[in-house]
Length: 394
Image (cartoon, rainbow, N blue to C red; front, side, top):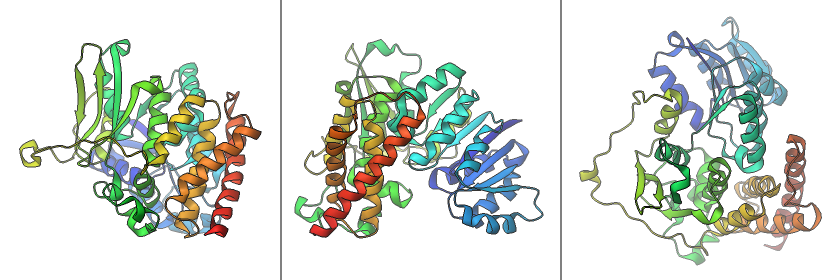
């Protein structure tokens, strides 16, 4: 019986993963080792009971008594806090879903790789902040990383059986989010509710807003660079409002291989879950005749400055990815709290990178995880300062 752990089980990726596990036979077909969640104790306990997990871990220690109460009599162990999440990653499991949002997913993912596990990586921040360390850890310990972002899963599938040296270009697509057709002057007044209303995907609030600002795609640009090793000039972004074509790979003979699929994360998750085979995944089958047409456009650089910033980070490398991600997370916090405007998020990130380039050596390579975490902390401090300054100037 295959053993699995799901980190970020109560988020959108985790829910989709649990749905596939349930449809695939649940606790009768899989041995569920660990489930972790943020604050939704009731849902975490419900999942743990249903799947008969060995341990359920809630991120916030104050929620531990509630989790223990919810699991009383179930035989499921309850734990809480960052250390407990890291320890859960040390428990033997064949397949680990890294679905925690943000830099918090880095440590458990690294711990799983050190045990030679198969890591289904939905936590793009891990590659953005510590790509070289993550990939080196996988190589040293014989671990496997499978991309779960729909775009990177698509590239991975398109490259299967192909010579990477024959690749000329890699194109990842973006829906353009809810603001792709808004007048530029209106973007400054965009609200949190408007930014969360993604037209195609059902996702959590934070990733939906990241999609609206294109920061999600900016992270995915960097992720493509780190996972596949292609230089920045070979990686492109194409706005594709229908979200049917997830990525394209162009080869030196002029051919372009496109991966199409429904706008449903269970497709990429299911591919990783069944890899190296192709198992049945209960997603909608495409009806191209009904779709009628697919459209594409170049991204608007003025509307989406996050893409420019990502390219600067890809050129700089080193610790700049850790700073970029941390500043983005802090800027997003301040936007969601109503303290800065929608367009201010990119300004906060740009100011943070500029300050750190002068004082912290962003281009220096990380010698270990401590370097990444130290830069993450410093960038959060500087981004907070930049956001407060913008709030005062509004």
